[in-house]
Image 1 (spheres, rainbow, N blue to C red):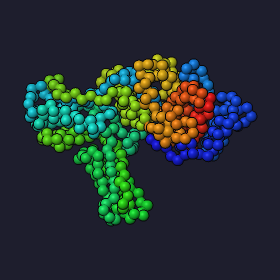
Image 2: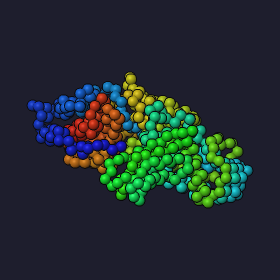
Image 3: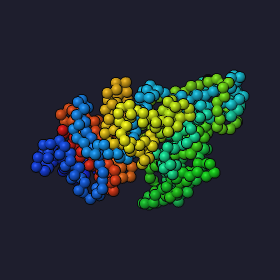
Image 4: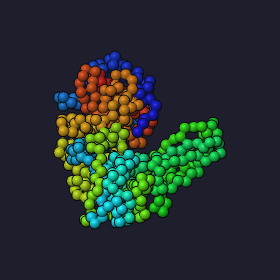
Length: 485
């Protein structure tokens, strides 16, 4: 997620407003009172065009004393967007533990022995959200090193650790972008594929299209051409499903001499994607395979020849927060459901655990609603006080605090805050999780003030009708004012 122009406090209105605040300006006496200072920032913004009807909730607390320094609509319920991932990350660390790892098992029939297995090769997944092409290469190497030279039967994919529902929200199924990725107990590359599109050698020739990973699982229809260098035409990359198969359609034009662009598109049938690329990779490694890739269940009389473990949850959660990865969030929700409620893991079971987690902290406010783990659903409802309460509780939990806060983006430095708050006193002083949907923004986390106070804050807006970067300027103005407390 990246924001638009103005996100580095470049908006003149906010810059002037912030400077006045730090200098003690504003309405008579307002800058001398903490609450009135922040009220002034908000009211000044709400008076501007495009902010009519904007609802905003804010809470600021001292992490050391628990003192509420400011609140505005702190108990009101908002669509939290990706601030929902704060709850997901916290619950995952508490329920599964920072050292939890996902297993992908390779099994053979117990009677099979030797390099040329006459039976099927079974692959059993547990929902690893971090299984990417590099991990697949390692898995293939582990199979080769286990002595397998030929697979006489089929490759059987056991994805029954999760239920068959591939999305928590119906909206996910309507799109093909990376953030529309499907879930699955056997998944690869966040269930997306990279489509690299570049110009041909000269105008008039077809554009060059390449997939990563290379796979026959996806059909490519390249209707894009190479245009003149001055062409303003655009290229379009869409994923469709026809007859159960994934089709990538590339249309439009690419200017001659331009740099290739990479588009990421989600894919249907996660297990089929995983299994097809696995079979292709095994054959490239010289392991003969003449059967088919199919779904099934690992029978009882099998033996594991490879147990491939993921990186620890602490690092998976870091990627979840820094890059606001919807796929990882939904995989974790189902994994939690599988651990707490038994297999197959379901989103519903995972969300019930989220609710129990909030209740254990006394944060199950009336009206709170959780419909997914990523915040993609507009049916989610959380209050700023609930989100700040989760952050505060994690700060007090020594066993998970460091891993949890390591998932927050750092202002002006990395993650979704890399291009925000890059100037003034805020770079490196704010560690937070952002959120963004049409008409919704959120930023919640911790920060250190100029006086050295450490605070927890949550700022959520709903109902904006202007560009997101303008609302981000309001958030930055508030954080700048809070920094001066």
